[in-house]
Amino acid sequence: MAIPDLQAEVEARGQAYGYALLDRAERSARDDDEAELAAGGRLLDLTCLHSADGTPLALEHRLIALAAAPQAVEVDFQTLAPGSWLLTSEPWTEAENRISAIEADAMAARLLGLKPGAACLCVERRTWRDGQGVTRVWQTFPGDRYDLVARFSPAHMKDIRR
Image (cartoon, rainbow, N blue to C red; front, side, top):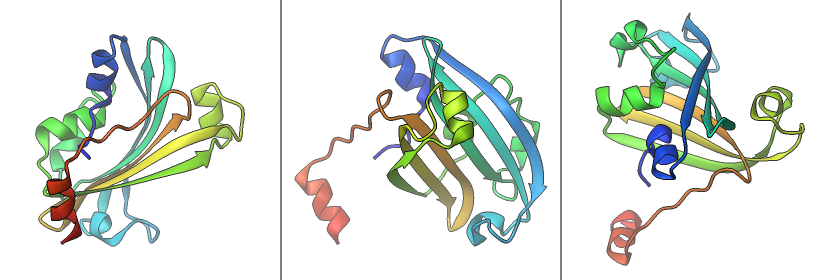
């Protein structure tokens, strides 16, 4: 699976992309932050909302390790989605996606225009550069507004099984 750029995906579907930064904080790593991401000590903690044709598409909570991407502190995430910036500005050497079905909590339901407990798709992604954590993101999508498509071949699957 590739790391998607939500703006590019929305626009490829012929829809108008929207983005809003809901919260931004620079903070010290906490005990509950994963070790690879917290190794540098400071994290940029972002909460964003993505939309398609004015309808909420994804609630995003992202942590960026400032030891790996110190220039993130100066990026205007009011106008630029962090995922788009990371894809064009911060190289990564390894990524992991975890996809799960979840129920919308009260905050996600309110922001995504859902009832609490509605079915959602959660994509949790972590990226590393040469073993150093760069980012961890949780993107929550209403279950009926997003799908993941991965195209692969048997030869590719052979490489994965090794």
